[in-house]
Length: 391
Image (cartoon, rainbow, N blue to C red; front, side, top):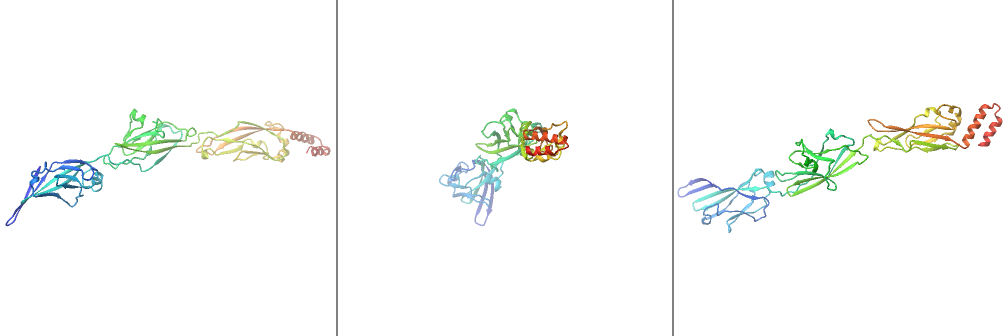
């Protein structure tokens, strides 16, 4: 115990003050009101023979303690919150929080002031929390894990001073995962055990999610994960939603590679609809339809809707060019069209082709023969009447 004495002299009275320092005592924060802190009889000599004694208030006194004179002890008077003392009011150092309590003891012409340092010990009394309920992360499909992409994750907050937070990653069903792992700015190598269970210590400033494989959106486009934070007896979790975004990696395909269609009507008609599919998404899956070899069949005899794939045959254009069909690509009543289906993907469009074979049957065959007869017969009148009969 350290002691300093100051004496004041007057004409009739000699009055002395002494300042003494007592050994440090320790208590935990958040003790209930009225809890015992320390006894005074074993710290202040002859306390029971003193005229009076009590606490001395200072300008920054939080009025945390009081004296139980019947027991000669110091007790807790108001709530003691470690974080409030060292972080908000800055009345103590967070690494070693000391609250100096002064006790004045009066004995005739002497007043002794004892300073008792009370060490407030931090306890794990604050729950962890995340500022967000869920986090959405987008990962482009087919990205190689060799690229070592890192996606920032939310970090839990613990209001306790110098708290230690550990993180673990699970699936939504609380199973361990080999698809992702946790890493941070100070961790260059994570040991095999931590990789397996996805455990990362909070000593780093930032937390990241690292994919461990290449993902295919067409197989699975969403992964639901749980990020768990633990500190002491407390733990909290938040949802991590991983969305696999699309790339243009699938070629559009016709539902059939080969179509054979018969036409037996003399009216303009939708003869069929070509349906194609693309396993991609959005613009990568939007398809345009085109006839590749339309130029060999003049006057748009066959047309296709570029959006929905509807094929249309125009009878008038067909009869106007019967002579044209005597070429290497078709017979008089059999035609072959190549249909191209192309997506709108970026940066590169993908495409494929399918074949449609069109055969003219029934009354159209008769019209073809009559047309040939008209071409070779110069008189024409009787043949024209025959044509009207077949119509």
